[in-house]
Structures are given as structure tokens and as C-alpha cells.
Image 1 (cartoon, one colour):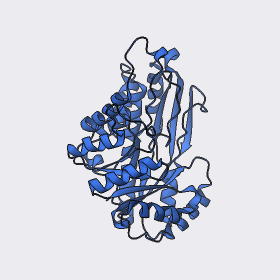
Image 2 (cartoon, rainbow, N blue to C red):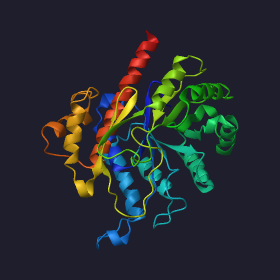
Image 3 (tube, one colour):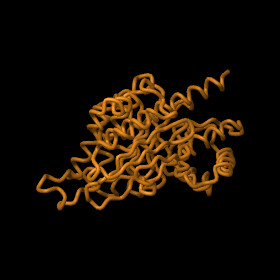
Image 4 (tube, rainbow, N blue to C red):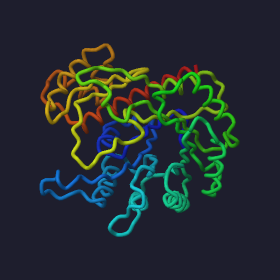
Amino acid sequence: MIPNNKYVPILKGKSGEFRALNNLPSEIKDAIVPIIDLVKFTPQSSKYTQGKRQQTFDDYVNAIIKYFRIRWEYNRLIYIDGYLLNKNKKLSNGYSPLKFIFDTLLNENYLAIPVFHIEQSDNRKNEIKVLSKKINKGIALRVPFNNGSGLDKVIKEAINFLEIYPTKIDLIIDLQDLSSVDIKKYETLVSNEINQLENLGNYRSLVLAGGTFPRDLQKIPADSLRTIPRNMWNCWRNIVDTKELKRLPSYADYCISHRLMAETNGAPPNPSASIRYTHENKFYIYRGRGLKEYKHSQYYEEAEALLNSKHFYGRHHCVGDEFIFKCGTEKKKPGSPEKWRWVGTAHHITVVVNQLRQFFRDLSA
């Protein structure tokens, strides 16, 4: 069950995101229930490996299991969604990767629950149905909102397929990408559609999710600072503030990422030196240039600009802000894209947890 006062960060199953979870203090971990989106495996092209051993699909899956082992405590609830994983790809032993991950974690007493995502193959849907019955701890049902079109019908069909009662379902209504919608009109539409759900009061949990971040930062000019509105947070707040919903949903978002991964062709990436920083109602993005040509030292100037700005929360806000402060003042360790992903993610999670705490304090006042 996901209490409605807990934050549900939806994170990619990658090293930076897991490091963010690992670096959170217990008081923040106690306030969240993460969903891990396992992402597609893309092998690096042999022409770029220079004779080095290429990572196999088995290596990739075992790395994910290792992330869980060293970055998340086994007795803390976590949800795992495999809808982005490679379709029909098996491990060398013939195992399904999702089954292998769950079998391994459950054998080590992890409190992991599968997510049944509407947007996945029939084979994977059947696999998750079997997994859910075996685990016997309920299931998360994740449904894209799609402007509310046929929402209740899709949910009912999924419930019938899963052969499970709503009382054992954590219903996640995913608004997906909110970057280009009319938020005011969308809020009314979302409220109306949720209130019309037949079993609204019976689900074990109700979660409202979405995001705003672009898939990549290519449309943001190099050496610039841009802001992006936190449409999901603003949407959730406005919806619950109206008090028109028959049930208060938990808040979920994609943190500082888009819901999908940028496609690659097997070439090693050349990301820009960029800092993604969450504030009250917007994201601040400091975008530099490609790291291969312009090096990691770009992070020093970006961090200095951030900590000297009005929107910096202060070095003691969280472990991510402490790193930003040291990077911008000491200028000894610039970090890497992976490092800055966990720095920004840890900061974002801390901001949202504090916002929700304030919201519920005000609600009970």
C-alpha cells in the first residue's frame, strides 16, 4: 500500500538514480515509495569499444540486481516496472530478465512488487500476472491517462485479465508528458475522469503521476540557463486544492527525467555538462557544452552560478546541495553526468518530500 502522504518518485533503473536513493537520509527514505522503470539494454557498438569486452545482456541484468543490493534496503517497499525493457529478450540461461530479477530479489527477502503496465507486450503482461500470483502481495496497475479516453474501461479490462480484486491493486494513473498541455483545462479533465472511476474507493492505493522534463536537452542552447515549469506538481496541487476529488491521490513524478529514454545507436554518448535543479514551481537547467570537447571543468562555473543564485537551497539542504557547494567553491572534483544525475535526483526528492510535508501540515491545520 502507498499512503497518500508519501511521495512516489519514478526512477530509471540506472546507477545514478540508485545512488540518489542510497544517499538519502532515513527520514527522507521513510517518506517515499519508489517505482523503478527498468530501461532498455542497448549494447555499445564494437567499433567504439576498442578491443574491450562488450557488456552482455546478462551483465546488464546482473548490474541492475547489484544496484538493488547495494543501494536500497531489502525491507523498504519498492515497485518494479519492466515496460521499457527489451521485448522478448532472454538471458543466456533462457530466463526472462524480469522473472530473474524478481526471483533473485524475493529469494533475498526484498519487499518488491511488480507493476502491470498497460503499454507492454502480451507476453510480459502474462508474465507479470504469474509473478503477482506467486508473490501474493498485490500489484500496481499503471494506466496512461490518454486524455481520459476510455480510462475506466481499460482499468476494468486489466482487472479482469489479472483476476484480482481492486483492494489488492495500487492504481497509478499516469498523465505522462505534461510539457505542452493547457494545465488549467487538464486539471478539470483529470478530476472529472478520476471521480467517474467505478471502484475509486476500493483500490488499495491511488497515485497520480506525470512529468515535464524533455527527453533530452538539445533544444536548450549551450552555455545558457533555462527554466521549465513543474507542471506535474502544479497540476497535482491545483487538483487537490479544489477538494473536488472524491479521493486524495499520492503524488508521483519522473524526477528530473523524461518518462522515456533518448535513443542511441550504440555510440558512446557525449552529454553536455548540465545541472538540473528543482525549485518550488520550476526546474532550473544550466546547460554547458559537450564534455568530450569542453571537459568536465564546465561544472565548476555552473555550480558557482547556481550557489550564488537566489534559487539555491543552501549547502545543508541535502547531500546533493552539499556537493554543489563544494564543486562551486573548492573546484576540485567536477563530477560526471552520472554523479550530477544522483545529485539532482537527491535534491529533487528532498524538495518534493518537504513540499508534501508542508501540504499535509496545512491540510490538518
